[in-house]
Image (cartoon, rainbow, N blue to C red; front, top):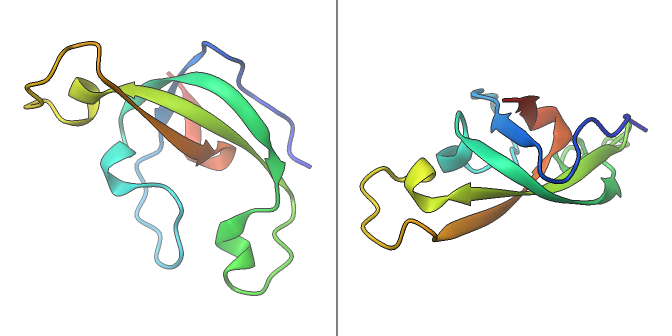
Length: 95
């Protein structure tokens, strides 16, 4: 298992990467900064499981909260609107 690197309330940034294949991280979140809302658990890596591999080492999965205006600068709704995205640790960096 991969060690848990982030804690609730910590600011993180989603890696900007464009690997080919089965990727579980939404394109619209890449490069953006959010706050870890919680650790959801540790699971086998679905990007590896999609290719019938073991999915090991298991990866921590976080729920990361983004301000909608962080993701979409032209968003015209209230500044308090947010989007929660579940993202595996290998896609996250400290912000």
